[in-house]
Image 1 (cartoon, rainbow, N blue to C red):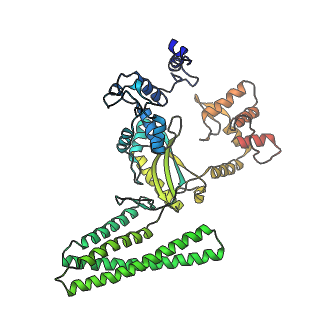
Image 2: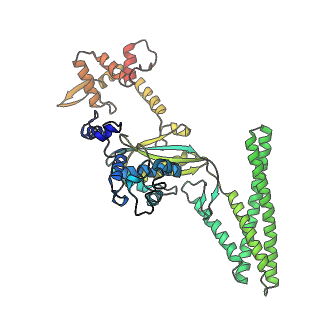
Image 3: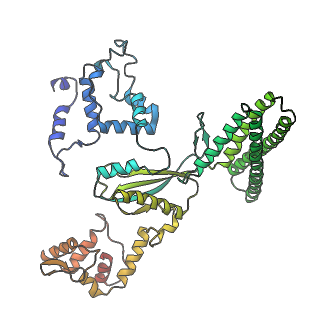
Length: 484
């Protein structure tokens, strides 16, 4: 502590002891959250600089490790460089990996290396596919057993675009976990494999491959011509409506690409017929040069046509689950991500039902579904359609408006029946705790109407007054109806 004082630092050791030893106002045994960040971060910093060598540094705490993995997944290498710092890159005393002493490190924060972080991510049980993350459901049940769960469905915008990596992996497609994209990708790979085998196969197999390829090229011609006509009609309609210039530009580029692919497809059909004729008329000679040129050009044509057949996603639907209490982080856990462009409300309900089935298999009680306002038909009530707060409010107003004054007062009056406390007129929405609260206020000197008004005020934040129920001049009637 004297060293800290001489260095101009506060007595952080005394403060740390107080944070760990003293409880907080919420009843926790420690002011510092020992089960999560930032405790893991502080523990790793102390362990790192207390070690005589990097090989003696204890294992990184789980909460700090998960935080670093999350941050690296979101912000990448730049964040890691800023967070960790240069480490030993400019340390004159470190000439080999066997001479890495923590006290000599030029480091901002002791952290895992990039290799360690990528290794942790590769070991994750989370799937990159749009399937339901069953591992996340299992972990949620393990951490919060016996609680009720809400499902939250929300869509977020993404940059629309189709990509194919050097490993021939697709990304950016619409994928609603219905196996449509996987089937298209399988056909695409089979066509490319057939083209690559064309130059290496025997004469008979080459003719068979050419005929199959010719059949698929004729289908491509039909698709390209149909798509070109649709795009041309859209362009004419857009010009008449004087829409945004960006839409016109996109349509013009699409039309030019389709015209080019259509021209290339006609060439490929003619060349395939010519090769098939040569192979049948001169079977003793292999047209090696022509076949090699044909396979190289036809590969780019197939890739271009397939790209036009794919549909790019513009949004991602994220399904999350949240415990009813929402008292600990993370408050909402994503369990399914679905790239889409246009999503019907019926499809949203079907996807939600699939998630509910998986949750029911794990005995997870689902309270309901929460969505934003873009799903308009979800605002109605029914067995198959989720409801909204607006609909609940309308139903409650209608129900209360049909009740008599006597019935409403009986629902808010406590009585003892054979030693059991209950309302004179029971209602499942009004619990015994509410009735006991009203009764205690009346015992302290408030009238029944004053206690009801006090209960009504507790339904709105402090400093606010309840909104008028129906503008009635009868204050008692207004208070009673609004409170119920």
